[in-house]
Image (cartoon, rainbow, N blue to C red; front, side, top):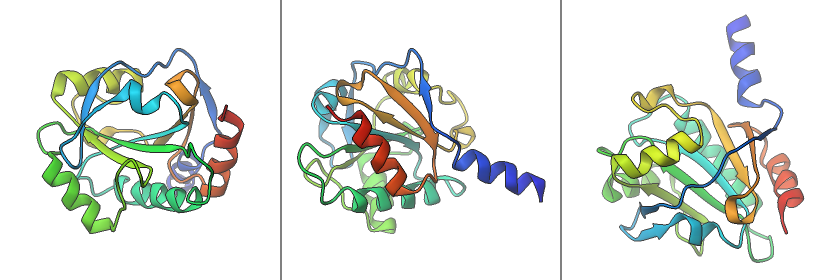
Length: 178
């Protein structure tokens, strides 16, 4: 019983400012096979960044559902709306086709116009993103149950539990908006 309480506490942990986190200048590939310059997509809008892999059966499905609920919460926001980014932890398995299939399983609405991208890429490029956000480099299933909230331009970051309620995330994003 204590193990469950500890896990739940981590999933909705209090937000913490992350010192020294910087969005690396990389180009990733989205679920449609479109190359996306991370700096360009992050330049003018707040970001919500999570990590996932399409073969995950533990935290990724509930974290994806939490991101989906946040997307719905943000639907009425004025432009520029926050952009949700889910970055792959499996460069070999998470091809654009696999990411589209993953999105289909969860009924995700993706694209810049929808405010959410699934992003993959080659191992060296993804490694730069993983290191910037303290993600595991060898075992994707060891990734933390966290969501990162970033100010426009990726200059200031907050780390929050993956299952933080969407209205609370929206309130934090409002504080970070320009």
